[in-house]
Amino acid sequence: MKALPAIEGNHNLKNYEEAVQNFDWEDVRKTFSWHKTGKVNLAYEAIDYHAENGKGEQVALYYSDARRDESYTFAEMKTFSNKAANVLKEANVKKGDRVFIFMPRTPELYFTLLGAIKIGAIVGPLFEAFMEGAVRDRLEDSGAKVLITTPTLLERVPFDDLPDLETVLVADETYEDNGPFLQLNKRLQAAPSDVAIEWVDREDGLILHYTSGSTGKPKGVLHVHEAMVQHYHTAKVVLDLQPDDIYWCTADPGWVTGTSYGIFAPWLAGVTNVVRGGRFSPTDWYETIQRYKVTVWYSAPTAFRMLMSAGDELVKQYDLSSLRHVLSVGEPLNPEVVRWGVKVFDKRIHDTWWMTETGAQMICNYPAMEIRPGSMGKPIPGVEAAIIDDRGNELPPNRMGNLAIKKGWPAMMRAIWNNEAKYQSYFELDGWYVSGDSAYMDEDGYFWFQGRIDDVIMTAGERVGPFEVESKLVEHPAVAEAGVIGKPDPVRGEIIKAFIALRQGYEVTDELKEEIRQFVKTGLAAHAAPREMEFRKSLPKTRSGKIMRRVLKAWELDLPTGDLSTMED
Ligand code: PRX
Image 1 (cartoon, rainbow, N blue to C red):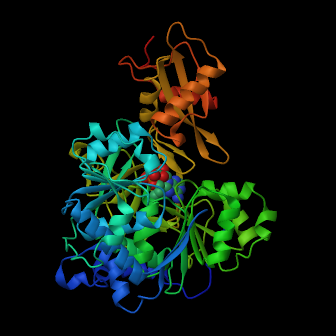
Image 2: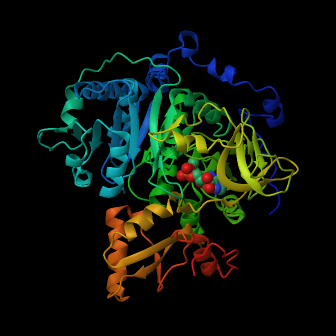
Image 3: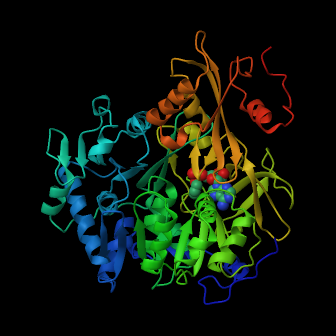
């Protein structure tokens, strides 16, 4: 597909090359009031600052789902997050304590997340689809002291196995207090609306997002308050937010996009933020854009592909003319989807690349820059990216290698919780953060994604570690061995496919397949359950007993299996 020329208009980033030349993170830091005091609190800068500086009456949050339809000004967000902070203080939350939030999107999620940050706690959002095993791993590892959840999700919280967990706040107006389980709503109502902000250091903990690698349990990626410098910067130059924008990020705060760009970036920029609760539905989504007159829309390739398959006729039933800027993240954005966006919305979808670990956007397409469909764009001003070989040497243009970033951008993770060795392993190549993605850069500095170097699966934009799924599968009494891979899929990017060897005495039946699928669904998460299963007498393993996913993948894709010298006989 041909390159698309820059979009004319009054964009925040007018000249990319010039911005890169003159860039200094220190200038961005100076835009915050904390530059003078040295002490900071992201929740203050995102909410209170605007409430106190002329935006008190501006809507900060439009929230709707099938049952609720609400809006909150910056002044109201300040009040409700203060109240939430006071409720958490009553529950004995202190600076640095972990407060986890396991609930679907509702205004209370946003109040409590901001409230926890206001008192210096480290927040941990958990995706509502997680089942007991996944919830346990994360609460255990983080040592969470307080959990905020709903009556339904509470059933998946193994409270008695979690010695650090002291209080559970249940968001439900009819919930009756019961020992450490307390109703959130009435406490929010009764709590004072003022709170003393806990001013913290820029390097103090802000948020923990658990994410999957190719081995081991999910790891807790820690971000600090300093990340706001990059959230704000990218809100300006990548999201191109202007004061009167209506912004909608479709991601759930259980994933990093839903916090960095569903909460922090828009509010740091003082912009009205739309949250649509409930599941994906093409009609709800188009209605959301039409109803709120959304101007800037940030979503993901799987969602765009699902909208695409819902048909162009549907789009025509809505007035989407408010849209000014559309962006995508999480998986490769096919040129075909870009073409569709131009056809139906008359908008180019701008791809952005980043990761849980990077905390904020890193390589992006900007409105005032030519788009090359299929490319992730260029590094944001202030970030230096390169393609390097396995020894850390930079490769020339058009050579595929490791996508790496020069260490030291504001939103970079500061730790893997409880796992310093894992943290250090990202930086083994002197001065570089190695992303785990392979890519190349063209002569003009555009980056092109090629794939993951490890076995991490991206399914419908969600990152799934094959090891977690395999571990769950072998817990099933019928399963002797399991190997899990991502299989290419036109809509979801990849789907999860499991290769399974059954124990003696079991036979493959449809019932058994369904039972195994349900076992992963209920034990781990619905999005982690294999959509396809293939049964084999045994699976390819190394001599040390490790399942060779590479061979499974080659079988699946009809590719050569490569070097098999380490395979057991
Ligand atoms: O493989 C890359 C893919 O998503 C991975 C990061 O996943 P996660 O930490 O869940 O964060 C997703 C949203 C920030 C990356 O290592 N990825 C992300 N953006 C893109 C992408 N792959 C291709 N193109 C992108 N724009």
